[in-house]
Image (tube, rainbow, N blue to C red; front, side, top):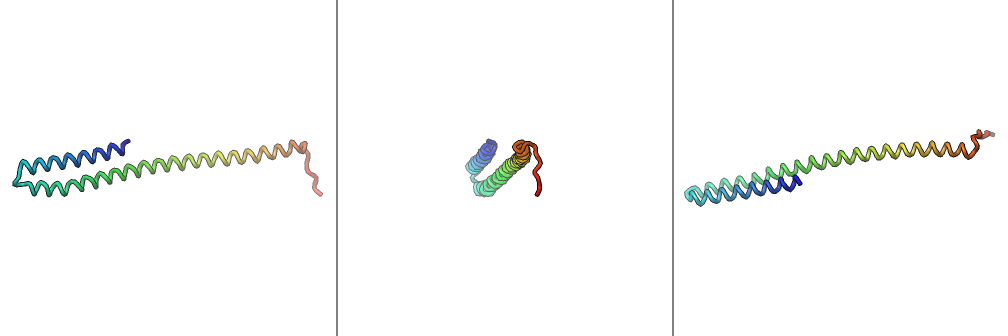
Length: 107
């Protein structure tokens, strides 16, 4: 949601900048070329800065998600290993129960 808000904010800022400079060029026709030149420089700068912020936000968000995923994966692996150890212990106990707790004779 914040990503959409950031993109909307950048678009609104660029639109307002364009409207202001177009109005300035109509109000001051002698400086119209100057106003439109400044506008032509400012608009790409606004979009570039907005894209940097958007990319940074996406990177931070994905880094956070990857960290959470790695932690969940580690917990799942730990549970798997514990279950595996538990199964081996239960198989050993079952083996002893089936054999009546008798020791196996060696030949």
